[in-house]
Length: 280
Image (cartoon, rainbow, N blue to C red; front, side, top):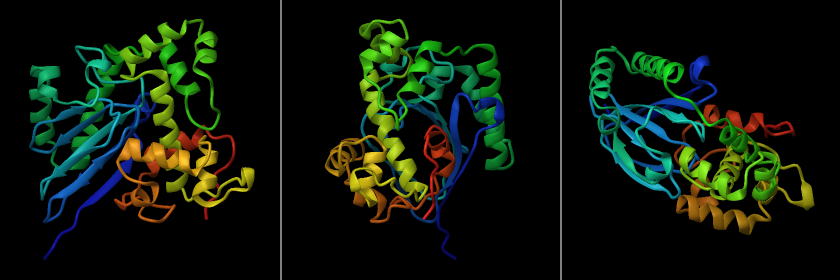
């Protein structure tokens, strides 16, 4: 009997909601799976059950990974500006994939052993989140001004970077430096990344365009997400994903080509949108 893969997202444990965007379990079937990782503005932990966990640094371009057959991975995606304990700033980890053993030393080995004994991927994911919850309670402190900047840079209400810096009582260069350290990218690059994530959130939710400027369909959603027009969206999509919007979404506005349900991942984006999301 042939088995196929699956990918299931969940909201994080309540205690992690302020730092973790979503958690997931991915299983591959009898064949290897080609996964296209997209920039999200945050870092991720990828933890193959029985394998070596990795930290995926902030992405500024797509990363294509071939996941072997019969592999189960539990994952954690963090909000921009938040990350698990790390020995370095995030701009040193941009577009990199590092073993957690390199970053966490002996604690990573203990975590691998505990995850392998968890009994199921679901239990392993709960254990991993419990470990992260303890770390954030005891050692991790987010930069409060960067956290405020991230919220201001979410899509729907575009803001000028200099205006944001003034609001935070920082110079533009200070804001840039703090964002590079805490997020791994400049405020402008983060704003562009979050804008694209906002577009994907609308597309995945089956949202109806608000009709501004007489646009509808993909052009309307592009405008709602903050793009000047559909051509602007297409250029950014190609830069961030390596694909056109139609290629990425498989020709449909209510799903991506991978066929995965990313509703838990995009819920934080839709929650910041002033207009209600109307389903088709």
